[in-house]
Length: 127
Image (cartoon, rainbow, N blue to C red; front, side):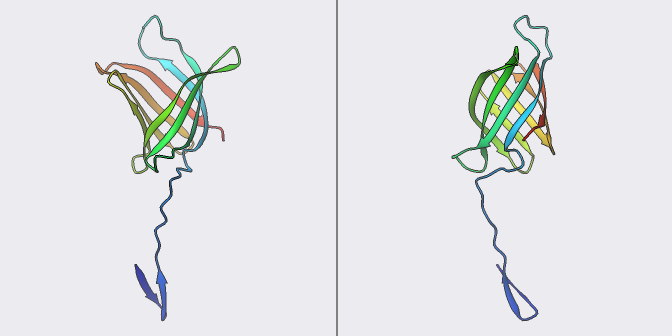
């Protein structure tokens, strides 16, 4: 797209990036049980979010829980990243994680297939 300003032609260029800088980094907080399931424990967690080679609408998240001061990785995998809605989503037939990014805070839920909210998470960006 070209625009003429004071006799000069200015070209507008839209840069496409595979990066999601606002969400990339380390996020620390709490993952709290919402149900009374015996196996569920409240946890201090750290999510490490990085760019995905699969494009700008994906990120990779490694989720660690902190037990006795040590990080234990719970899992690593690709998540959907919706820039417009500022959400992160990971789903399987049994559950859906849906997280909302608001500035340097992420809040969200783990919802089971029967629509039971199982966990709530709240994270603050540390890097």
